[in-house]
Structure formats: C-alpha cells, structure tokens
Image (cartoon, rainbow, N blue to C red; front, top):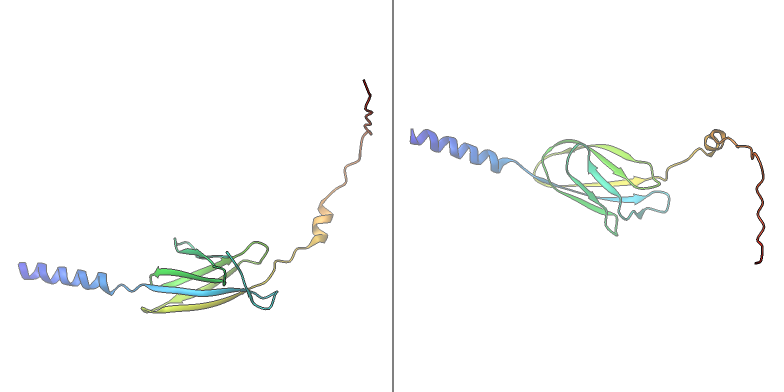
Length: 130
C-alpha cells in the first residue's frame, strides 16, 4: 500500500513540475510614424488574467503563460484594436511584433447625424451701474 501511495505521489509531482510556463514578449509600434514604439499600449490575452502595458520602448512581457491557443488583444487610444490568434508552446520565450494603425473616422456620418436646433428667441442683457 505504501508503494502505491509513493507512486501516486511521484506521478502527481511530475505532473505539477511538467506543466510548462512560457514568457510571451513583444513590441508594439506605430505604423503611422516610421515604426515608433507605442508607450502604454494595453496588451492582453483575451478571457484570461494575463495583461500588461508597453514600456517607453513599446515592449511588453506576459510571464507564466500556460501553453495553449489564445487571442492576443492589443489596444491603444486613437488606434484600431488588433486581435491576433497566438499559439503558445513549449518552455521558451515567445516573441511577437505588432504594428498599430490610427483609427479612421467617417466625419460625414457625424455631421449628418447632427441636426441644427433653431433658436426660439434671442436673450439680451445689459449691465447697469448703481
């Protein structure tokens, strides 16, 4: 009985230590301005708790990622949000480089939706000296 418990304990330990964690690193750059790094862009593996922000050089790192297939979501104010499917394998460092483009706005649609409201009456005021 002791041998069976020892074997089960060893197999459990091997299973725990065999679980590999990966470090996911990358750089986020601005495609609009000659690949300049984007500071404080949000990087997240969608539907997980792994998230980070880029540093001054546009670099990010997600540590302890369990191997699997994820959707990497990169967002930055004024830029189009990107979602990339990433497959994380092995016990290594995965490296990604993502370029972001500025978000385009259709100003015609904005102006068409604004309706001018007519002024009902003009209000005037005069200041009096006392």
